[in-house]
Image (cartoon, rainbow, N blue to C red):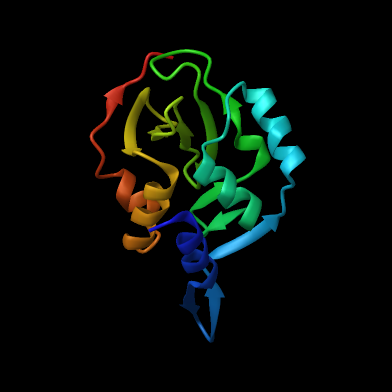
Length: 150
């Protein structure tokens, strides 16, 4: 799937909640291109193209109340094996998601110094999340972890 198809799928997805349906993606606020460029300058790395398109189309928001995209989650990775990459999202447990200089997506455990590669691309990450019914916690619990040298 292409990122535009995935954006449409996530935007149109909903869950039944009690007496009504609730969208899977809850928007927080829009992001403009100049804001995204300022974030890139701040973290010292370009945001991967598919993540960039996602943010410019959907803006900041939450997927199924489990994965949060906010400006404040963006931070440069300054030490360890993925130095030069950046963090971009956080789950409800406080774990982070980041990307490296090649655009691969990683999960970073908040409670232990571990990380796991989760996808070769942001598009692949979201596509797999959709296939897993947006259950990010269930997915990351299955990952083989490697020690991270912070």
